[in-house]
Length: 383
Image (tube, rainbow, N blue to C red):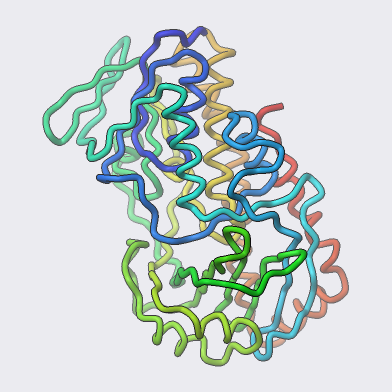
C-alpha cells in the first residue's frame, strides 16, 4: 500500500517510536509522535547497538558507515569478581561491530532525523485511550483532545499504558534482581576499547566506554528481594552500591569508587504480548516484547520492529493486513531473543561448583562463544 498522505500516530518518543515515525515519514506518511514527557531527555546511561540494530540505523540514514556518536567495541573481557582476573576475552560478532551509545546521544540523532523528515513531535502529550473505528484509529489525550489517523503505533515502553487495551491487565513477575546504573568521567583511553563483564555469585557488573572514551557506563545487577520499585529513574545511594559490591576487586572496584550519582530499579518480567495488534493499533518495542537487559537487545529489537513494520505496510494492501503480517514476522524472533536474555540472567550469577565449571568452559572455548549468538547479530531486517 502507498503511504503518501496517510496519517499515523506514534505513542512514545523513545528509540523505537522515533525510528518507526522516521521510517513512515520517509515513505510519505504524515506522522505525529505523542510523548508524555515534557522533553526528550534520558537519565545518563549507555546502550549497546549490535550489527542487527546498526543496519536499521544506516538504512534510515540516521548514521553513516562510520556511525556518529558511537563508540566502536572490540569485544568483551570476562572477569572473575574477586581480583578482576581475566577469565576469557570474547571477540565481537562476525556479523559486524557493536557500537556503544549514550542513550541520550542516540535519541537525539533519531529525534533530529525525524524532525528533518517532517515528523511532528508533540511533548507533554499524555494518551488516555486509543479507540478502533472501522476505517481509522482515534487517540484521546488526557486534556480531552482527539486525534484520528489510519493507525496508531504504541511504542510506550515495557510498562506500556496501551498494551492492556489489547491484552487486558497483566501482573508482572519480580525477577528478584535489582539493577544499578551510573556513568562516570573517564580518561584511561585504550586503542581497542572493550566492554568488561565481571561475574560473581548472585551479582555481575558490566562496564563499557562512551563518547570517545570520556565516560564509563556502569550497570551493576544483584539478586535481592527487598527493593521492588520498577521505576528506573529513581536515585540510588552510591555508597550503598559500593557496599553491596564491596568484595568485587580489580578494575571494577576503581570504577565504582568514582560513582557520585546512580539510579536503581527492580527488574520485572513481562511475557511477550499475546496480542500485538487489532487492525488499527499495534505494539512496538518493549510494549510488545519487554526483555531483560542480559543480551543488550532491547533497543535493537525495537529498531528491527520499526523496519519490519514499514516493510509490511509496503508489501500489504491495507492497514489490517500490514499489521497482521508485522505481528506474524516479529513474534517468533522476539520470543527467541527474550528467552536468550532470560537464560543469561542465570548464567551470569552462578554459584559454587557450577560457577567454577562455567569459568573453566569459558577459558577453554570463550573465544568461540560469540558464535552461539550469531543468529541474533546476523539478522538483517532490511534485507
